[in-house]
Image 1: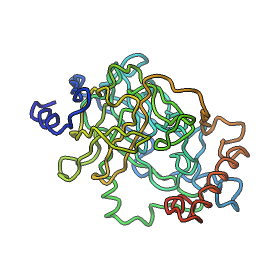
Image 2: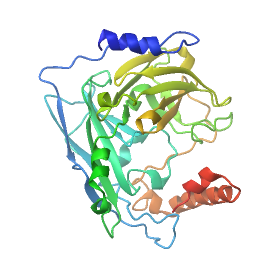
Image 3: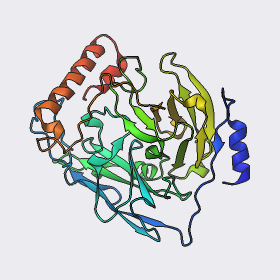
Length: 347
């Protein structure tokens, strides 16, 4: 990383309780540079769904649901030898579903990608949510860090069986979507996902939040890059903060350059890390950083789509019951004036 960028980055960092984040030099890029290709899905390719068997149930009917047993991402690599225990490729879908893969000879099933929060509703998954989903891929070194090269970025669409959404898209919207700026976070580098009973932000002693059990609490590395034409948008800047779930305070803000790796100080351990990308017209990403395994209280088993006894878990009786229960709770909250709960109800 250029010294001027590093100096600007460190100068903008807030003073922390223990120390500032430490910039980590990126892996070397070999010559010739790696070339990754997303063979499938192709850009804006549309996949018709397999509707839920309960079309009259507005809570569990999923007209865009894909077959979790077969729906996958096919990649190819040039000038990059991918193999277990060595070089790999980071795949990130919709900012939160990620894996560092070391075998490109077969498609990577979307159902096998680990979300950064374990409890995700069926209608928000890239397997089932209607509309467009983005995918970014970046080569990774043997230590799991991304090479400092632009990510390969693309989109696909989950469409209802009865039609195709993108037929009505305006060209201006398509162009903007193709150039959109999205943070690509190397979630697998942080550690092993922990699927707690609660979404982050509802932490208490009896219901641990989802996050990551860190690989090495003494050396926690945050590795990221950005998609899109970042350098041409001076208003697009993102930052990280540590979030105290009990006090709801956001502390230790650090403004980040568009790409890099930093070692987080101890002030972040046991807290939630929040990646604030709203200035880039994106969203906030957050996850609890567990420096040791949390207590096994109310641990939520995450049902991986396609691994249930039914064709897909979310088409099974258990899946319907769980989703219905959630939306019933949101409906009650909505009736009491909770606007956010109203927004979560199916339209």
